[in-house]
Amino acid sequence: MIRIEQLTKSYQMGGESLQVLKGIDLVIHKNEFAAIVGPSGSGKSTLMNMLGCLDVPSGGKYELDGQEVSGMDDDELAEIRNFKIGFIFQGFNLLHKLTALENVELPLIYQGLSTEERRERAIQSLEMVGLGDRTDHKPFELSGGQQQRVAIARALVTKPPIILADEPTGNLDSKSGAEIIRILHDLHAKGNTIILITHDPNVAQQAKRMIRISDGLIVEDVEVG
Amino acid sequence: MGIIQAYKLAIASILSAKVRSFLTMLGVIVGVGSVIVAVGFAQGSTKSISDQIKGLGSNLIQITINTRGGNRGVTLDQLLDFSDQHADSIAALAPTMSASVTAKYGTKTHDTTINGTSQEYSLIRNLKVQEGRFIQSIDVDLRQKVAVVGTAIVNDIFIDQDPIGEKIILNGQVFTVIGVLEQKANGQDSSDDDQIVIPISVAQRLSNQSVIRNFSIQAVDAAQVDAVMTQLNTFLYGIYQSSSAFRVFNQAQILSTLDTVTGTLTVILSGIAMISLVVGGIGIMNIMLVSVTERTKEIGIRKAIGAKKRDILMQFLIEAMVVTGIGGLLGIGIGLGVIKFVIGGLGIVPEVYSITWILLSFGISIAVGIIFGLFPAYRAANLSPVEALRFE
Image 1 (cartoon, chains in turn cyan, brown):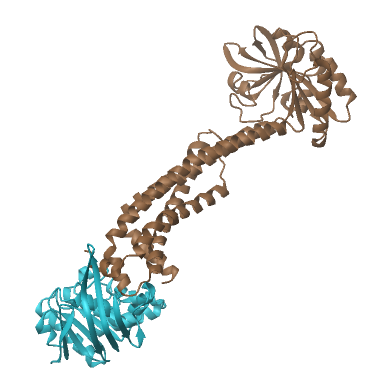
Image 2 (cartoon, rainbow over the protein chains, first blue to last red):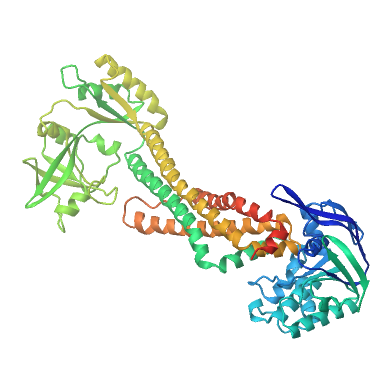
């Protein structure tokens, strides 16, 4: 499903090259529930950007769902993000002016689906996260937990092979956070591949596998849960 | 993403910031509005002037003598002989002598133009009388002090009164009104209806000038106009031995000169209006750039979930086009309103609407949207998703 070999990423900072990822080797299989943990500055966010095809690596290989991703151009990466990855962000990242339903429909618009099909799949997806009765609400009319569930519905609507959740409970109270974790467990049980990025050990304990990053390298890779 | 989807998105986005959208459009509204008004005004003036010239009658040739008096001047009799010799190409010839006078009737006065001429003038200028009769040869021969008046004079000094047979005083001389000219223009002052026609022989005495400087000639048909002009030039050159002593010209020449003048007027006026469109376009670019910055996060989210560069470019470009397109439509509406109610309504010039210019200015406003929206849209499309997502 995901195969990474000697992945590196460097940034140019005032004439100096700063290496954030120093050669990551990682394989994540279908239907795994893996947590990537590490303190801030460890390179986990950069790794998450690479895994999510939001950014391109400086070196190494990245094979996603059987496709070599490194070396793709911006538009090819956009298509990979559209079809293969479902993002769940810490800050929900919903569009404020759109309703829950329209937010969930958005990835399907970029896939070029018809209005009816979009609508049908978006409603299904919202029902799956228990928001079938909130389709016409705008984000500001929803609680934080509900907003994150809309974001999960949006991530699921394209039926992506991989769901990337970046600190999904970071902005939520413990009750809403627990609800989100429960949904992730559900999704995993239904056969989804989930990668959870977090700095919170308690959240990481929810996954089946924990990959610890420190200073741009994997320092621990263990079964948990 | 489909085009229809992109339009829906653009309209939603415009509606979500109505005041800003309107202010953005304002430049285009003013620009397009002034193009429409400028062109309407220029074409209206052209129409009003060319209608007047065309109203002079068809196949008209005019002669103007430039030299002062002298014994060598061409006489009416010489020209009448010439016209008789060329009866196959010249339909009629009439002398004209114009002067400004004040017409008095009782205590009322009216400043107008008198035209001294002969019977043939009515044929050449297509003048008909709606009442009474026109000047006749006998009036000229006997130097009868008779006058045919235009409706503007009737409206001003003969209110609710039959002017036929009444006496009016022109430059101290008493004239009897024998006819009223059929209304040609709108019966207003300074129009074709504001004139008094008197016999040429009387006009010569009244103005104390024996030399006639102006003649109107009608060719039998349009095809003969050039031939008659050549013959006249040869004939007059034979008399004056100088080509600058006289001028022979016809309507077509006047009209083509007029076309050049009004063409230039249209270009200048619309050029000025175009500048305001460009200024409007710069305003749009400015606001679009701000809008792109404000919506960086939105762009990041859209890109993260799969929007390609093309999708983002289209979104902003179509938004700019819809803004300028709506602005263009409003501008056209306002421009047409100004033409109808101000320019036409106040009778400054006739109302003229040019479909070509309406379509053209709508096209230009869309083009302004594309041209000035391109840079902000390009900028939005090329934002890096990682950095755009980080933007708060």
